[in-house]
Each structure stands twice: as C-alpha cells, then as structure tokens.
Amino acid sequence: MPEYPDDILADIADMRKQLSQLFGSGQQRPPITQASAGLIMPNRASPDAPASGVHYFAKSNRPTALAANGTEYDLVPIPPLRAQPVDIAANMVSGPIGGAPNATQYNNLYNDVREVRAQLNALINSLRAAGILLT
Image (cartoon, rainbow, N blue to C red; front, side, top):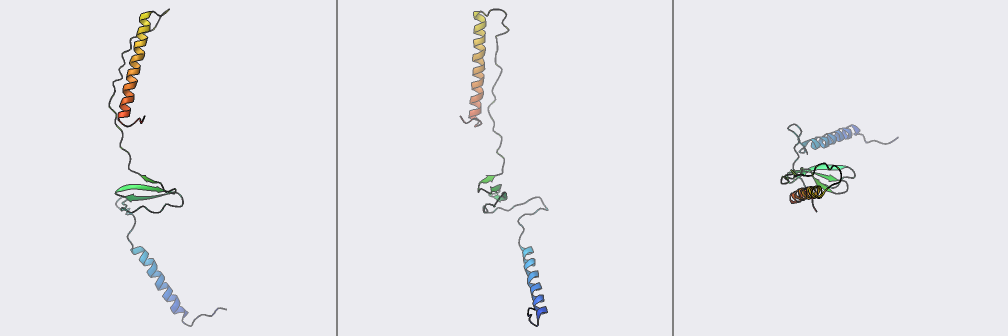
C-alpha cells in the first residue's frame, strides 16, 4: 500500500487549482481565427511544414498554403489573361469541285490554305503576346 502524506486533500485541492489556472490561461490567449464575422486570419510568418497535408495561413495579406513537402502556394487566383482579338473571317473562295480540277480551282484552294495559315499565325501571335503561349 502506497504511503500518502497526511494532507492529501490539500494536495488534491492545490492540483485542482493549478489545473484550473492552466486551462483558464489557455482560454485567455488571442484566437488564431475569428469566425463570427467571417474568417479573418492575421498575417504571420511561414509556419513549419506539416507532417502531412496542408497548413493554411495569411502572409502579406494573401491567403497561403504550405504543403507537407515544404512548397508554399499563393492562393490568390491569377487574373485571366487577355489576348488581342483576332478576326477569323477567312475569305474562302474554293467551292466543291466537280470532275477533274482545273488550274483556277487549284489556285482557289491554294489561296484558301494561305488564308487559313495567315489566320492561324495571327491567332498564335496574339496568344504569345498575351503570355498564354510561351513558345
């Protein structure tokens, strides 16, 4: 049988007091988020990477996520890229060919292919200028 000091009740009362102080002090610290008025996260330095999953936080007034592999992701969406409009009204002149094609029909088809190529080049250059196509 273990030996207890004579004032075990005083020890228990003292431990209860210490526990209530510890639990009470935990409730006193400022909250990490405020949910009553929407989700408000104050800015903070990058935390340590989690063992698994993702850690969400605010950094420089921007929502950020830190993955378990240490990669930090800025969660602000990229604004849509805008390219210059391209007039795709290709002027096609070749029509259906009945029988053996003649020189005029070959030339019309050749001109149509050139027109499509010019329109495609204009579209590609517009996408490159907007940064949508990199090469």
